Image 1 (spheres, rainbow, N blue to C red):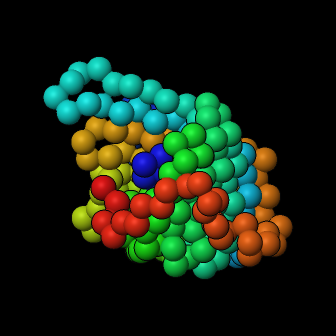
Image 2 (tube, one colour):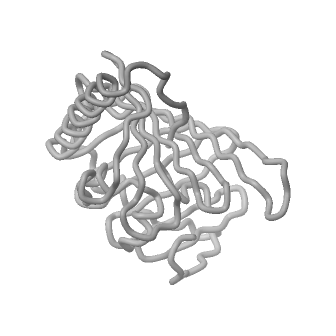
Length: 226
């Protein structure tokens, strides 16, 4: 499932310097970044962005991983609406009106239909982008990198989840989300880089609906995302 997330990032950790000063500085940066990020998306009604998504899949029992990069656009609108349109390397679509989720593969003339449940949104780690989550309530948060123009946070879900942790790269001044990386329990990683972000563009409601073409086989699913 191409967007078994649909939302990710990667980088690493603090250098060794005077501990107390660094801890206080990182705590201050972490708190300011979380506040900016939460306020940015709480106040936004919708979001559109270009995306580059990289998925690294580790086969069960294998040491090597396979990597796939996809490009496209994403649109979110509150409450709970989203549309992921992939153009490269081949077209596909993931769209939800907040009630029903569709995953459409035009190459195979196939569409999967399932309920857009809270469990699915949690699996995609995008609740706060859809206005359905509070970062400090839902995650344990630590700062991996804090600079004037860029910060990276590690978000550890407080409740059992289909993913182990989430890294987010944020502009701490504006609260803009630049990149997310979802680390799944079995070792798979999905990274999404956002660019050309637009807020409050008021997308049409029809953008979040999907009517399968006549030649498309529809598969109805009830299962929660893995």
